[in-house]
Length: 124
Image 1 (cartoon, helix red, strand yellow):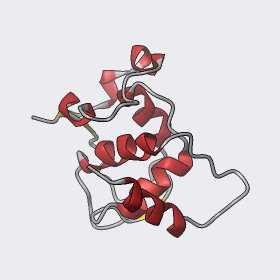
Image 2 (tube, helix red, strand yellow):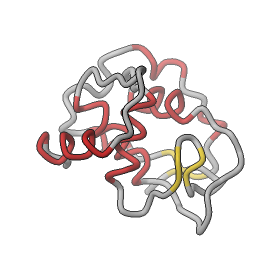
Image 3 (cartoon, rainbow, N blue to C red):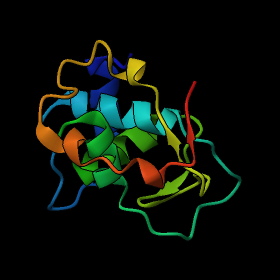
Image 4 (tube, helix red, strand yellow):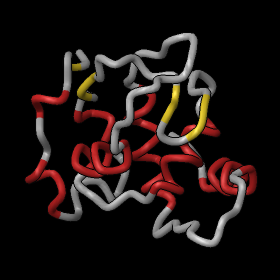
């Protein structure tokens, strides 16, 4: 699991804009876990997906776009810029075990609105 020190280093790499928001380091951990479950491709996707909304519904907690951007910067396989990362069009529903040990997971109601039909496969 990502340490607070690693997350702070990742935040420092984010190009700052006026709308950077980080409520909790666990939000970055949640985004990182969701991204980690995905299949990557060579180039960035041209298909728009509201990634932050998809991630927060899986995680059961608000996640900002900035949180997703920091998680992507930190992830060794993720390339590109939000929302056009090198993710396969066939997105993977991450296993819930990825939420274990992340205190902020499932603490808000977003999970109730998760649309499982957007996922092509389920992580084993």
